Image (tube, rainbow, N blue to C red; front, side, top):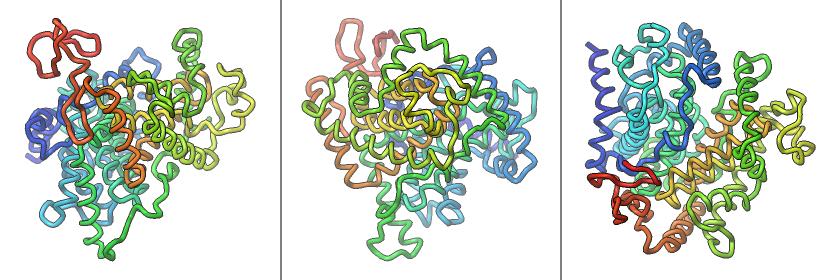
Length: 499
């Protein structure tokens, strides 16, 4: 009976809830039609013919070995759907038994709305394709305490659990930066649980993390999120008996990746073989236009960020013409560098071209970069952090922004400077950094300035503002060229494609 109830919850919350959210904006921060499209900016999932599937299989083996351990028992307990799962998980991270509606209305509101926003985003992506889950491919019974045969009827890609778990963790890390590393670790593990239970492949989980981060990035265009974070912060301070005026932001450092991410893969790890395989798979790309792009974008600078994201938002960015947007990007480079550079010596790993004793595709950088750690990827940290921040500035170009930010990280595998697992872990570090930056009032002002500047640039083209959740129609139009939006009946053109 209990499992049947949770199966019903799964249907409601990964499917129909996202539809209801369109008309119930008090339960979600981003309307369904305005959500970033994970299928657009993350490459297609790894099927059984892909070399990425080797890592999926290795991680499936790892997950299965965890099931009869305390880690596995926790993964099973936390397999439930609905925001009830996050009430317990985040409550524990905050030193509470749980987060209750009746006694903690502000914390509960923030949790439910971020849960719905992240879950909805992954659900939209799940509706666009099909991938067989590990438990079905391996002909196993559902293993998680709340998992049922219902899972066999739903696509594995991406992981909804991971998306809503990471989305809520990011929002709560922003709400209380003093506990960000603990909160982020619990959000990270919540996604990892799905590999252990056999409900999802590792690449499904990675996509879920990115889905949750993208959804929360877009949620920041809705001022209700900031209001709810402030209300939840005040409520939590009262619950903990802290003095009036206590500020959990003051003195809180940037996130510590060594505290919430797993250690990097090394040559003794079972995953090392999949890292090497993916390195060799990416190497032929060097001799294509995509490889030329990766080599060109190897420059680590604000100038390169102006170029990459200027292309994404169809504007020329420079300190002279767009000083507010450039000031925000300048800050991102400074904080991204600090976050990555501090972690590198703590979790040192040889770069691929050093480990394999062969030349990279950017020979001019080899000498100065040879002794630096492959984990984390500084370029990936800069590119993905900038992308998530720029979604808030130019939400009408969000999918292209995220696509370019994702590519900027993948460049580093192509040129031989970072392993695939380093790049994926770094994107987690990036989304955590964005949460911390949003908690800073000075950064909030920089964002507001950049948003105002962007809106001024496109005056007469679209009407997206920082306080709305309506989507721009400038890139969506009817066959006769007249403006439309995603809800328009008949054929419309979206990003050059018919729908």
